[in-house]
Image 1 (cartoon, rainbow, N blue to C red):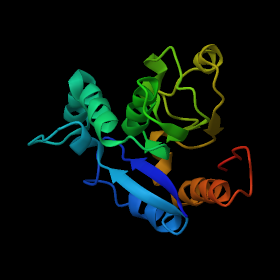
Image 2: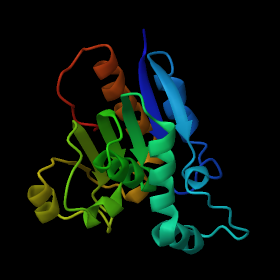
Image 3: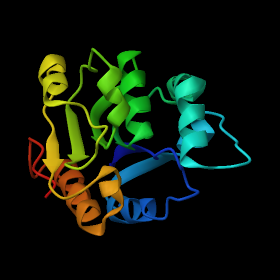
Length: 185
């Protein structure tokens, strides 16, 4: 029986998320996948979709709305793969009791505002050039390890090399080939 994997998009959801199909294609053979579009979880429906407008909608209530909706919809223990804002949503939901088996976030920069971590196995991945990633001090203070990928910025999760590496790591976990996360690159 396949393990359940919940995938949560970045702030753009499916609107700029063709890259997400690569993850789903690689992972669907070993996981039962449930996908959430961040904007739909947050009830965000903007006429003009710019980085600034979407970001503003999420930080001004959208993240909290998405967390509440995720908590209502998900009651089965599952693995989570979440991107950027989706990672922040999963993290916050985990702190509120979302049944998470493991949490793998990529470019979840807003977790730098958090002072606690969910009590689950966590893998964090960031691009070296992501100016909003949490500081080394934050990782130490919260008690989490991270992997920093050289020469990448915030959207490293859209790069095919990163996609393949993350998916291989998740597939190895699903097939029990490894017990600890391995490096993405």
